[in-house]
Length: 418
Image (cartoon, rainbow, N blue to C red; front, side, top):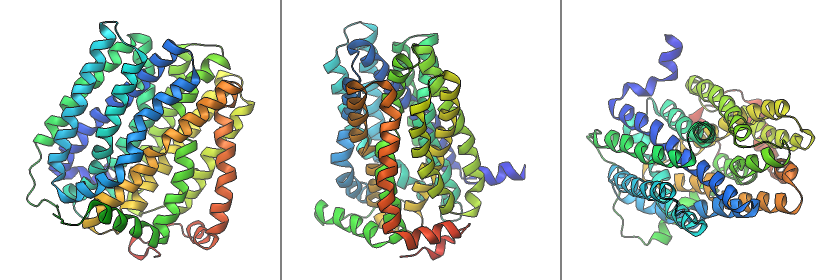
């Protein structure tokens, strides 16, 4: 009971409980749809590059809009912004479901819907991330950050696993229907939230000035800056499972949707174990030594996929990749959120979202192009090896900070180096 209490302490807050439970359903539905879109496009086009282009279309709006969105998020009530974005998601999910079930779906339609999702996501994700402190307060902030990050990042990793199962057992169209229904849950949760105090800072500054202020804060705080550099590399190159696994399953393992689903499920198992572990360990604060280890570890594991030609060995590595990926994103989120001023929270978390999701188009197009040019066998290794090469100058250039992180088991969150 003590372990459960520590793991889910922030859920004692009623508002956060409504918010978190709604997200558990809705965010998972979003990644179910994205995965189903990937498989649908690959079946339609048989092109790894066009699959990469689809992923890019989902995330390019985030690359372009997330930073200015952070300024808007700081100016208006976050609950209101979330209601608008969730209604938009519901409408897009219904449109995707309709064109698939009516059998009129075309590639350009899927791309258009993916772009629209990306536009809404540019506002929705940083709003969710920065809304946590308003719902749990400072006392349970670390646990709230961890649980919120766990939902989002577990969905990013485990959502595709669920999609694979649903595609095998039912159909691709059923995945889109499930996603559409999932938005009802989060809308109900948001409507049930009643806040005594709303954090919003109306500003007459130009949005460009607000964006510069947020970027300046990230750059001038060494811990956050190093986290940003690590995220830029790892999130760009090591979070392309949706693009790589379907091609790997077909061209290397010579299998179909069931193997695709099983490999995605393997990453989900690893991420689920890591999710509960990090929620429990949140009471100890940031674990920066573990953060560094899993960042390098996920790149090394993907490099090893060059020597993998059987399902069993691929599944084992995917479990380990899912485990490392979850811990890396969880600690990245905590590193950005802790000890930052509330009036800048939306802008700073927009930088986190930009690095977490906005860099994905680059990695998607890169991995898709590599697999089209060479073979599906090179999808994971090309990303892993390049990530390791790029991490070397970052770690050397920040060797003093890296030394501090590695030799401090439990960072005191109130004494972050600036």
